[in-house]
Length: 344
Image 1 (tube, rainbow, N blue to C red):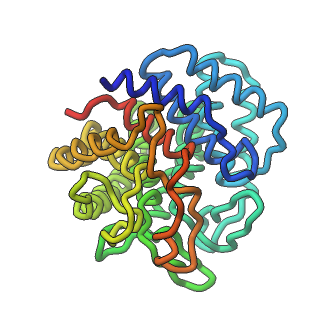
Image 2: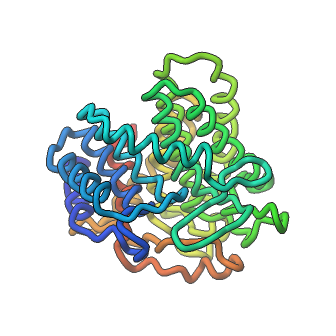
Image 3: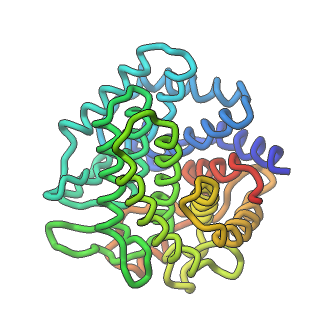
């Protein structure tokens, strides 16, 4: 059953428009969708999926007007795949150019975290939980590939520092963002998909580093795993009766959101498999998996996925974020979940 669902969701994803935010084709939405497709290719060996990724990346590397931001770094995860598959140095050079911008030129807070930069907007001295996935995973993977420990250390630092700053000790969940300028958590929202970015990212980072030949990273990895274990306690505690999670995680009157739920299922399942989360999490994973499957239409659309969600002025505004159209991040996160297979 899982294989047929993967095929259906992948086909739907390859036929959709990634540029739903109308900010450009090379942006975070495409990055998440392509990453989900990458995992499908790595799981199934489907050459149609690989060829789609390659056509998209090759075309936009040549023709898109690239803007260097945290969010536009997300598609680099698929450029890494193409370098691994082809050995063509143009892909590695492209990745190194983005990495150089992150390491040297990207705006940072007073605490050295990356400011969350996007196309056509400025969030000075703000950190957003999204950054952990958009840039952190890429830095660690590129660092492992090139044995550049500066990249690895930077990716781990970004994930760890963001989580430590955004963690609410009472709920054990992460805030959407924090402003060093105003010294507050902005909207104060414990946002669903934001929390899932952290869970997914730590799973990817830990798996990458399990096979990395470098030494001296164990304490940093352990620290990151301890943080995610705390967060997962909070996540499991607020799972809805239907198996999904709410978009405002600590408010059951807010709607259940599918992309966040798929991310939680994927990341928590990986955490159990890799040994940094307890087996007791598996019941929530299984319940969530089946709930997400129910949200996939006969055409492969991952339904009830919220549109791109910046930090709003207040928590109430999150209740009204639309969730009625196909979104590339919903497709991508569901493909990640499906690529892991049926939970045990």
